[in-house]
Amino acid sequence: NGQETDKKIALCTASPFCNDKGYIFTPDNKVAFMQRTDDKSQFVLGDFKGKPYYIIRNITFTPDGKHYAYIAATEQPKDLSANKYVLVVDGKESETYDYYLSLYLNKDKNGFQAYLANGQDVYVLKEKVN
Image (tube, rainbow, N blue to C red):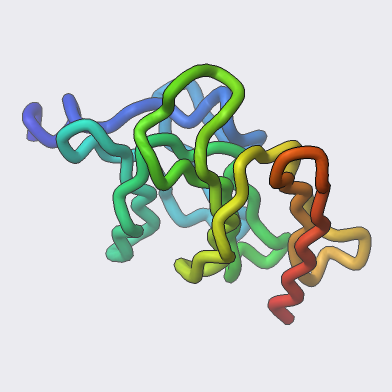
């Protein structure tokens, strides 16, 4: 379906699980991609379609592929540095922060760890999923 394909955008800059078509494969070989909806992007994994956001970054999966996380901008970007961001884990949002710094699979590989900030204050969010 050519019209649907046009709405898909590449994730290659956002995930190590990428191929040359712009799709990503989870560790358990499910296909994921981003879909444009008006001026927003939506994370799609199998039959699941996430909430649309202005920006989605740092998509990360657990080693078994059953859980995912990403950083999302909830407001239209004003400039390159300041926005409103949330950590999304398995479709659930954290509270909102002014900046995001990074998102990682935690050292035990059973959850995610993100660094977000409000002003000068940096917060470490830890989400265990297994």
